Image 1 (cartoon, rainbow, N blue to C red):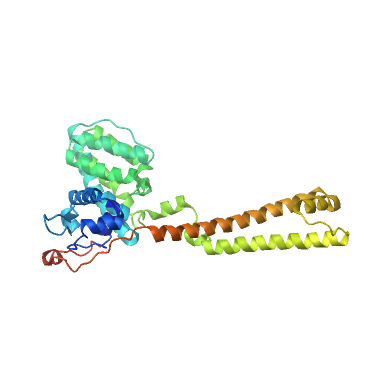
Image 2: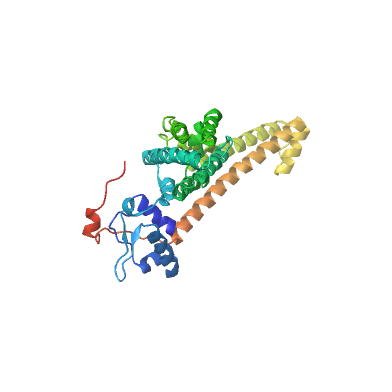
Length: 335
């Protein structure tokens, strides 16, 4: 329930000033008890997404003004298309600015000797060590949010590949940190962290790498309707071929008494040899598999209908009760 309401707020289905349905309506709509409803609303309130008024309606906040950096993970996960690309660009811009100062502070305060990292996880751990060396808790917590988004899958670590694959640039940065040269470490860190902003990964929303991992696109796959048509056609062709071949072979040889599959298999082996009998068995198996796939899909359709018919209906939202102050303070979309 919390994830559903969170998505509605972040995607704009619930806008600033909109009132959430009552506890009873949410409980019935999501088929949960009222305790679960209160817990979900409490989490939304802690994230700065809603304002709970005692004795009044719970209204959606303008989260761009009230939420904190912890919302970033959920926001990146919910964003799609151009909105996701723009958001990742914002993340990389902030990361470059903060990372440069983290490297400078690390060099000037502790100057640890660190080693370059290979791979996304090792690179994340390297920046954790640099942030620890900087001794700034606020920077460390901000870094935790970005790394959590990466490790949780909200941010594809592939967008950082241009950084962690450049071991030489990492070595130059770490040498400056170990030497205690804060200004140079800051410049080298910014140069390293800004590379991915011009590499095209952020502009594509990090979705190209994910699409490559996922394999063929949906457009290249058969739709369920097309798959059923192919399976039925294949089964029909195989059955018709077996019927015509058996009729021709057994009629010409005078074997008109065969009326079972076992008899047909034995007759083909006698008249045409083991190879023909094996081909008959394989064709029969292929026909059965095609028919089974059609039956499986039919069962899925029935279960989907049954699930949708018995599932609780999702609550609808009305903006008629929107408060004037919240409507007036609503800011336009970021990009």
